Amino acid sequence: MIRRTLLSVFACSLLALTGPLVPGAAAQDVLLAVAQNSTYSDDEVAKIVATGLVSGAVDVFNLSAGTPCLAYLLNYDAVFFITDGGPVDPVAWGDNLADFVDAGGGVVVGTFAHAFGITGRWLADGYNPMTVGSFTSGTLRTLGTVHDGAHPIMAGVATFSGGSASYHCTGALVTGATLIADWSHGAPLVFELPGFAGKIVGLNFYPASSGTGRTDFWDETTDGDLMMANALAYVAGNPTPMAAPSLTGVVGQDLLVSVNNAGASGNLHYRAGGTTAFTTIAMAPGATDPTALEATIPGADVTAHGLQYYLELTGCSDLILPAGAPTTEFGRVQVNRTATLTLPANTHVLGAL
Image 1 (cartoon, rainbow, N blue to C red):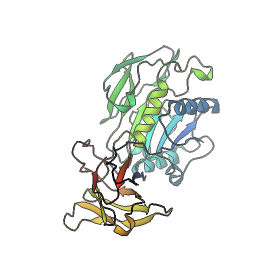
Image 2 (spheres, rainbow, N blue to C red):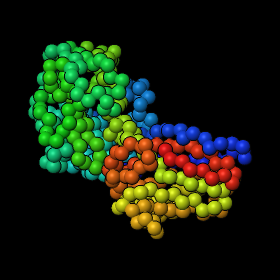
Image 3 (cartoon, rainbow, N blue to C red):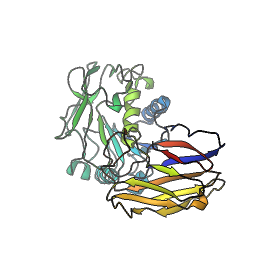
Image 4 (cartoon, one colour):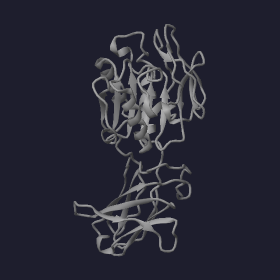
């Protein structure tokens, strides 16, 4: 999966000062891969979209009618896998979903997908964060102990009621999985399985809400919508901050763009102010620092009209960030932020996100 970070440099008057860095968010597209009643899917999409936390498309694929191939899945940053029935080909689906994670895609697994609906590499190679078992219902359960209140999935989550049935799976967390929150009776509710190229999160409740008219589903006046949207945004990559490479620019002089990360590869795309087409430059190890990945924008394109660029990076890990930036390890790509800088004519500017 390729995410993109965009830095815009705009010309301003000679008296202008360097403007502040303004964080933004890359667009995220998510797919609900489901085997369930379409009414339930409609409710889930509406709930996720209404939070405003997922900035791109929220689409639905019916697994009861077909199996999305890897190329199809790669159109999305995250997949939410939900079952209330059987996918048409659980083996192929399991193979493709595992391939999607290997390519850096994020996956959220909801009830009843921890109980049935997928086999193939997803189970054989240990991608599912919970052991496959049965499910239970019939007693109203609520949010229990939150073990990691700082986790992005729990942002804004104050209450949760699973409804009169409180459907959830009874499996145990697999070795290596991290428990984020429990149900009120101690069963796992929110959890994560690290160690893969893409993020994998488990939400152990059925994602359709009481908004469908089913009072046995989770209560839509509580925060199940936030848990779903937060989880999708998290596995899609947006909560992970990206530090833009150091930017030093002088109008009329070459502009070096550098990111310190051995083993990475990527391209720099830029366009001069007043133009529409991007020029692409392959990034290469630095001449003086081989651990840096660099590309140079010709000074002829650094004009008083400004310029715009973004990076495509793959194979990165242990990114060396500017002072004060989070020291997060990035898996395959790290471009989830935007920034805007002003560039007064003939003025030296240095900034980093």
